[in-house]
Amino acid sequence: MPARVVLRNLLEPRALVDHFLAHPPDDFRAGVTLSGTPAFFAHFDPLSIADDALRRIVTALPLYRAWRHRLRLRTCFIGTTVSEYALFPADVDADALVRDWLDHARKQPLLIVKDIPQESPLLDATSNAQARAIAAACERAGLLLLEGQALAWLPIDFTTVEEYLARLSSSRRKDIRRKLRSRAALDIQEIATGSAFFADAAMRDAFYALYLEVFAQSEIHFDRLSRAFLDAVLQDTDSGGIAFVYRHAGRIVGWNLCFVVGDKLIDKYVGFSYPAAREHNLYFVSWIHNLDYALRRHLSAYIAGWTDPEIKSYLGARFTFTRHAVRPRSLMLRMLLRRLAGNFESDRQWAEAKSADEIHVDTRRS
Image (cartoon, one colour):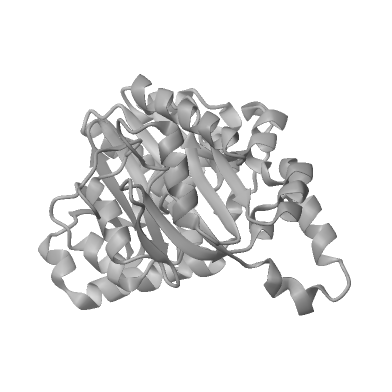
């Protein structure tokens, strides 16, 4: 990184960004722009984030399998895949930042400024004001603003897990309590990153193998963490990381890596062994265990990440949204994107179409 700049919007430990820059996901090239903004280059298929309707239309076109590789565009992303938000240098003019990013993208077919905060309750007023200014500067520079993903979070404004459960509907309480019975068969450890536990390369191998199981069953295969990245994070003594390790009959069936930053618990990575993780309802068990940990540490919020908004809503999460600023190099693609913009805003459409009481989720798949 050039001179180490102050970055706004950072909920995670700065060390996580440093590890990302040193050990980016497989097939990524990470670095910083001249302004010090974290960024990366990767091949990206826009269809991977399109809604089902557009995906069905495109995949039904003649000879799709023969030309689908052409949809994978070399893309310059402003942001990282380890931070909830794009990270902006403080006290730099918004228009100057956008010019810097356009120059960094150079002749790449696609530029995406990912995860621009949108009046986030998790950020201070100065950070939100800068995000507004940058969104406006992106529009002035010809980038198209799209609604982004739904970031799940939960204020810890209850004093016990029972009080939290009492706020959910009776049917949900009954379902969650039934799933939590599987805790009796589990041994749960809380292990700090950088501890002797993670000095064992075989243990880090096991963690990475379980992460790959989760990655393999994900709908979107984009940012596969490198082994070197996870090694560095697990051995970092200063990041505030805490790994919750779930064992059944002595065997690790899952882990969940979180970070305590200030008064917030940030949930970042998981590794599950299937089908054991589903048999023991680890998604639900780990959610409740994280809330219990936050209560014990007197934390103010639990930040649960971008994935699975339906299930997280079922569990009572709130959501805050981002925007992406997108600029295809091709004029034809720019015109097409403007016509189809709504097909790439599925999280916002989902949130507007469903109130929490209307959501019906097959929780058996979690």
